[in-house]
Length: 402
Length: 111
Image 1 (cartoon, rainbow over the protein chains, first blue to last red):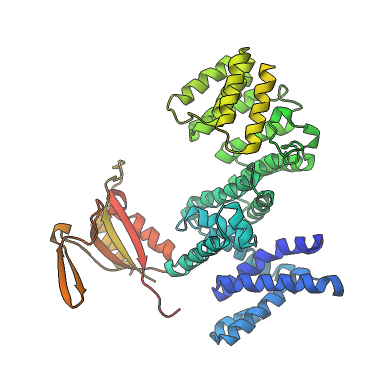
Image 2: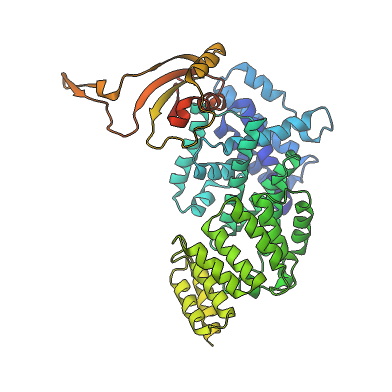
């Protein structure tokens, strides 16, 4: 795909799928028709030139495909009439309430894909497939299952939506407050799936795209910009996170000149309109401290420690406690960090956790006990979850003892 | 859409006992709004009899078909617009706190 077509497709695809699902109620038909429209564009546009209204062109093709298919299946006239009435350039028509209708369709689609009556892994997969148009094979690879297994999972999810009567609707009132966190959690999973050591970076970009869309469509929900800010600030480091061999680099070893300044600026601007003391808001503030710091030692660790205190008070998890200990270690000295770490490990939840061992190793090194620190780094490497992580830890062990 | 709501016991009921809903209020309200068609409390599972016919022979077993700690203690037939409405109805039932509820849509052969 050309860069232009790719951009048009990313914007048009969810609109088309969402609108066709609303009118026909048929998820597979909607996806197939949207895909066919894109395929036709790939074939025609290079030769014939891009149409004046690319999104409208794609919508018309997809709509006509849907009408043809439904005619052959002799579907009731009401649906056909409604399809025929769809204005292809709906989103280009100013005012007239049209934009709102199209916008609502995409939101409806996101909320339906993320319905809590579906299994969490199905929600993530269905969002990737239906809202983002990611090929099933790519999703299968990311979730370490075969393509046919992923196809079955997606089919099961779509069947459940139809059979169980999951509505195609954005909830309102109390239900919106209850459901939005679930939608954001799916986006967060999508992002981390892309951000992790072995993840597919395209997923992180899809998560950012969706967060931008939600922010535009639900301006009153301040937890949405918090999540978007978190994504942008973390994603700004994507090019600096690996060395030439693909090994993961910790913050202190990254070339900060390779951080994406534009993404950081946007992240900070978005953070200004976000809920600051919510779970995502606190995480975004932490990411902002890192993103704006000239170096590890020049980082506002006191603010980071405060944010982790807030997170720990809200929902204490072993990983939050671990990072809190590290932050306090930088802000108030390695002994303070080691004390918090010992407390968070008391429950045994962090035993044999590579990050816990690595954190203890770092703090121990800074407290001056290099021999013990190197041993801890080697222990952490033994239980590392990925090869790049293992190599990074062994490097630290060598540095510390050397 | 019609949903059969299985009302089940649970080994881990809600420990928060505040604002415990009253089942009579729940029945009256949902009957009045046409969201509950009917329902009943069932006799204990010790009164259950399981029936099978295999190769012409009637086989009767004492007790429910599955031996579990969570048992069906009643049911309600709901008539709701969609799953979200059924969930709203179910969440206010006292057994959502004391036990668990399973919402099973009727199969739609019209599709």
